[in-house]
Length: 186
Image (cartoon, rainbow, N blue to C red; front, side, top):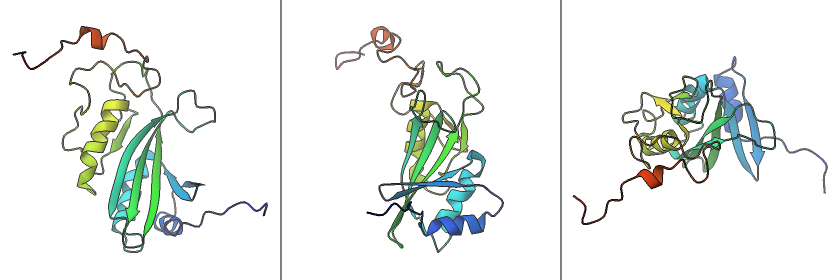
C-alpha cells in the first residue's frame, strides 16, 4: 500500500483554471468524486463555462442541493453551501461544484438575508427551477433571476426554513396551529 497522497486529476479542473486565471479555486475528492469549490460571485460564470465549453460539455444538471454546516465538527469556510451536480454525457464524466455562503443576520427566522443570494442557473439548465425552489424553501437561500422563486414544499407563509440546523426539531407550533384540510373541507 502506498503512502502517496492522491492527486486531483479530474479533466475539467485545468480547463477551469485556464479559463479563469485570476480566480482562486479549491477542489476536493472523496470516493472518486471531485468537487470544485468556487466563490459565490463566480459560481454562475464557472457553471456556464462547464456547460458550454465543448471540452467539458456538462450538459446535464442532476441536482442542486443545500447544506447547513452549523456545528459541523470540521471547520468549513461558511455556514451554508449550495452544491451543483453536473454530468457530461459526451465525456462520461461527473463533477460537483460547491459554493459557500455565510449569513449576515440571525438565521432563526425568515428574514431575507442579503448575504444568502446566488445567481440562478435556470438560464443554463431550465430543470434547475424546482431544485432551486427547494433550496430556497428549506434553507432560505435565494436565487437572483429565478423565474418563479416561491416555496415548493411548505406553504407560502411558513415561518421558517426547516432544514436549517437552528430550526427546532419539533417545530415552533406550526403544525398545531395549522388548520387540517380533508375531503369534506370547503
